[in-house]
Amino acid sequence: MEQKVGSFEVKKGLAQMLKGGVIMDVVNAEHAKIAEDAGACAVMALERVPADIRADGGVARMSDPEIILKIMDTVSIPVMAKCRIGHFVEAQILEAIGVDYIDESEVLTPADEAHHIYKHDFKVPFVCGCRNLGEALRRIGEGAAMIRTKGEAGTGDVVEAVRHARTVLGEIRRLQNMPEEEVMAFSKEIGAPYEVVLETRRLGRMPVVNFAAGGIATPADAALMMQLGVDGVFVGSGIFKSGDPARRASAIVKATTHFQDAKILAEVSRNLGGAMVGRQISALTEEEKLATRGW
Amino acid sequence: MKIGVLALQGAFAEHQSVLESLGVEVVQVRLPQHLAQLDGLIIPGGESTTIGKLAEDFNLIQPLRLFGREHAIWGTCAGAIFLSKDIGRRQPLLELMNITVARNAFGRQVDSFEVDLSMPCLLEVDPVDRPFRTVFIRAPIIESVGKGVEILSQLSDGRIVAARQGQLLATSFHPELTGDDRFHRYFMELAK
Image 1 (cartoon, one colour):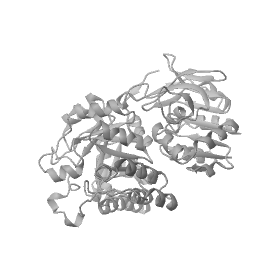
Image 2: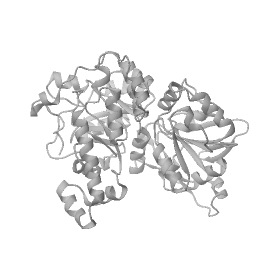
Image 3: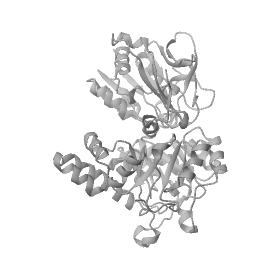
Image 4: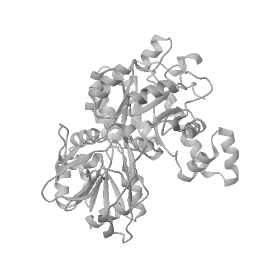
């Protein structure tokens, strides 16, 4: 009876256990506890939430392992952490301290402008962002065990999250409905590995779990993404940049479970205090957009 | 046959698709009224703290306890934690099964693993004796079993990973991820 660790089945499996849940950005142990108590299914350990990364400017890197370890000691739920795109040594460090998932994230400043990390080499699973199906399937080809649509982090504006989810889900519908002989050209057009394209066509969905991220700030935003057809949501700045984080966090968790029940959505949306102020996507310059990072 | 899957959070769709492939009618359970007319219920893997909190917030704890006295319930991973009497920390539990469970008993995600295990109980639904592929993801173990509980499977070091108490079933691992439907058929026998 040989035990096999770090298989793709086991990496993908943890993401399956996160489905229907909310993954929350936290910057310290106190936030992590609030997130766990509110019903988060995992937390993302960070030094600064994306709204602050935006405001501060400069180079954004992997967090100090000390902060991540403190958060790991505080909560019993899975702890994720971010490394820069292509920075496989940051990823090795995160694996060495035992994080449960690595987010190779466009929110941090990219370390490589052509290549992402070869993720099959790691025992720890990776989640990666995408704006369209081609980007998602390239990441899966490199070994990502979970995908999130990027949206536009740190804005509190859900419009990009909707655009990216609709794009991905629409491309999958198109792929399913085309005749067999067009699949190779489609694969070429979107720049994705043919085998993964075929598997997506057969399954009628991506072969890994797909969450939404980037701009979700209210229970209604979370339910909107769920109704569009994603498996769960990441909420970054939306919780701890709001007036009453504990209350809002709990409301977003409930809205993600009961995403089809408008009466419950109305109930949990009441008296949440101020949402994060946010920034409209249309007011961002091209350089300010994080979603364009990733190749 | 009509079986519910507790759909508060976690891998409920995976259980649903196995059950549907076996011709079972499946109901997603998010509120107490969804338990009506069910022959059994599966509590999926997910985060037990999240599932427990949502069950409490939407007044499901008591209805689930009453349901489990009369009907079959199967908890996988987080579901096994939720069914248990005691886990050595404070979080909402159904306390239906006379077992104590330790969460994250194998370590963190990098320690998650797959292994083939002997599962004699499955001979009841499939006469061909062969191992069952078990997938353990940040998995709990059943530390001890009390009166009325039968041990169904153990790892080579003796740790308990599947147990049954009457029509209640707990597994540390995830049969819904393996493409082998014998455990689901075993549960359907309990729900009959």
